[in-house]
Amino acid sequence: MSAAVDTAALASAAPQDERAARAPWLLSAPALLLFLGVLVIPLAMTVMLSFHDWGQYKGIEPVFTLKNWQEIATDPYYAEMFLRTFRIALLATLITAVFGAPEAYILNRMSGRWKGLFLLLILGPLLISVVARTLGWALLFGGNNGLVNKLLISLGLISTPLPFMFTETGIVIALAHVMMPFMVLSVWVALQRVDPQIENAAMSLGAGAFTIIRRIVLPQIIPGVLSGAIIVFSLSASAFATPAIIGGRRLKVAATLAYDEFLNTLNWPLGAAVAVLLLLALALIVVGSNALIERRYAEVFR
Amino acid sequence: MRTNGPLALVFHAIFVTFMLAPIVVVCLVAFTPEGFLSLPTNGLSLRWFRAIANYPEFVHAFWISLGLGMLSSFVALLFAVPVALAIARYRFRGRDAVVALFLSPLMIPHVVLGIAFLRFFTSIGIGGSFAALLVAHVIVVFPFALRLTLAATTGMDRSIEMAAVSLGAGGWTLFRRVTLPLILPGVVSGWALAFIQSFDDLTMTVFLAAPGTETLPVRMFLYIQDNIDPLVTSVSASVIAITMTALILLDRFYGLDRVLAGKSDPGR
Image (cartoon, rainbow over all chains, first blue to last red; front, side, top):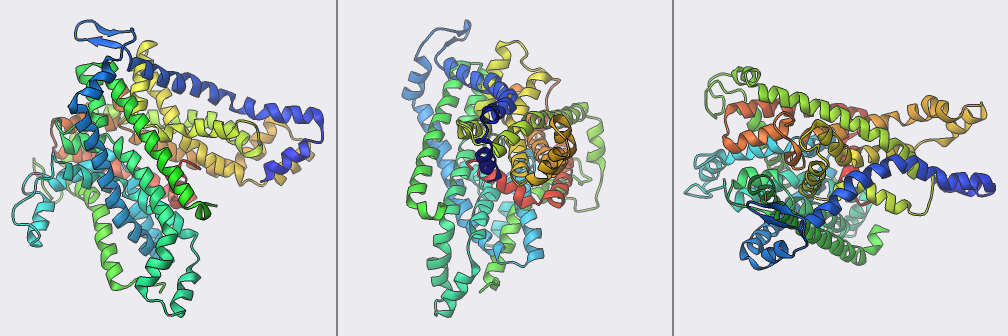
């Protein structure tokens, strides 16, 4: 805001105007050069790499070929792997939305001290090492007599132990846990913009608890849920640590497959193609759903 | 209407249990007196914490992670503070594009970044070196450093600067004596958040680290891939303790929800 006033004031003097036009570029120049040299160029090199040839004995050959892209397009292994990646991401997103949104609502209605404590407890894990959190799930799942199975059996929900390690179910649960803080946070931010008096007004007009949630609360937090869902989905689809530890060596998703191609098989061009495809697919999904949401909820975002 | 009913509180209790269970389990198992994975049912023991000292790979990886985190977040701030001043104070053509470029590492999957950096650093001949890790981490933590610095520079009271200028301060003095102290809380929080990001990063670093430059998350990940034993739980518990300390400091200093809210919506 103050900057807008500044530029207006500076516009009155011509030499100062010229300085004001140059200053932001001078200030950002070092970082711009850094990003150009060490981010834009490497990304461009990776896209190029995906069009290079590779052989077991000859290594990477810098010739133009569509071989890697054809292999991904025709071999059903890759279709299945990408399908698994997005299925896991979608399920994890659904779980975070179904449980995270009500929790954010409950948090928001707590009194100050409790609210602060539980926010710290629920959002704090976001900053704790993903490896440590996933290790916790590996311990909880651990074989047939893991704690989760013991709990489910003692509650009478299941009679025989369920396999969690090395299954998609296990990956989805652990990922939902890892991503949950993003959803709670996103809905919580949306709730901060809601006037609590509206709920009271609805109640004084005779609306029941269910009606208030359905007609007043839900419409106002849906944008928060959706933007949280976009974050959770894109992070889940590109997650590495959780699928690698819970899924083991055989249950591959896009990120773990790319890792294998780069550090075990050493077929870098193919790994680069998988990574570029993941990046493109995610960019399309995120940009597409952002546009949809903004059109649908234009008035809320304004 | 403003209070939670009993059903909501039960849901809340289950939810909090779900969020904390894996973290608590790791910390509990770390104190087991047994030689295998188990909850410490008969007494607590520090044997697995002492065992870390006999495993130099973990100790070395810890120092690498610590040095890398502190250095990369510091370098990121050196680049980020001028950018934050430029973005907060000037409306210029291409401003939105500049912001998007600097926040882009948040939106590019880390596996893609890891591959791109691996390809780039190998081709210029510094693959697997600490320098390569440092540059890569500077790029990855840059958005976090920038966001909190930007919040501070945008919210700053410019009249104090004007007063300093009218008293004859200018250039470097103005920045060092007036501007920097005013934005310091944001800068320090940006440093802390950037440090945590660097300290915890696995996905990108796992592509770049070589034996000798393995960071702690990378060492832990490779160890877990082979086998899970109480040693890796005591290492994890130590990492959790370090992060918690940083977290509580960050919460006291700046407010955790503000720090994280900046993190949650990279688009804005």
